[in-house]
Amino acid sequence: MMTNAVIDPDADLISQVASKFGKRALCIFAHPDDLEFTCGGTVAKLCAEGWDVHIVVTTSGNKGTKDPTVTSQQLAGEREEEARRAAAIFGAREPVFFGFPDGGIVNDDELRALVTRQVRLHRPELMLTWDGFRPGFNHRDHRYTGAAVHDALYPSSDDHLYFPLDKEEGLEPHRPAAMLLTGAGTPDYHVDIRRHLRTKIRAALAHTSQMHGRTERDMRAMYEERARQAEAAGEPGPRFKESFARIIFRR
Ligand SMILES: [Zn+2]
Image (cartoon, rainbow, N blue to C red; front, side, top):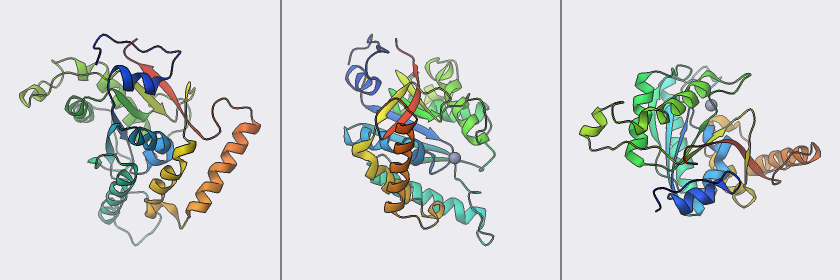
């Protein structure tokens, strides 16, 4: 791999990261089904193209129910299992759960240290996470997870004096080539997921506790309808797409 390579903002980001830096991705989201709904098609594409994809979930989604008979612990176990099934459907690595309480994420040193360690451990060249800085309504766990990942990549993960205990484990500083933010206010990168829509839907359906009996056919109809609306509104990009804001660290 060329170490002094740069990314051209006018050419496709994912294929440049793959060819110039390496096919390693790390996805960090707040709840067990965030990834599947926001960028499941993109993750399916990366896995199909031979990327090594690691997944981190900062909470266990242990408040994501309206069922009064379910305890938080039961739900955490169930939702972690669902996320493991979804990761297997993609062909990604088994997810790592930081185990923070649902609704309780804070962008603090503890979370940034955990994120930094994952970055130094897996040395991803592409990161996927929430846009932590989008104005308007967004779940606090999404905002703080996105902001903590952002802050961990710049400055801490690539500067050895941040979280120096990692060095004792033999983990060297590292910063990925680029980052894709989901749920972005002003997306500027669209991934064509037409060929991976079925995998995205199957992975989303693995989250049985959240699906309220929806079927593959219901989900397909929902995405078809969404594509029709986007087309009617004159939105740019492919018919079935996932949209991101890009942050390029190597340009
Ligand atoms: Zn969420």
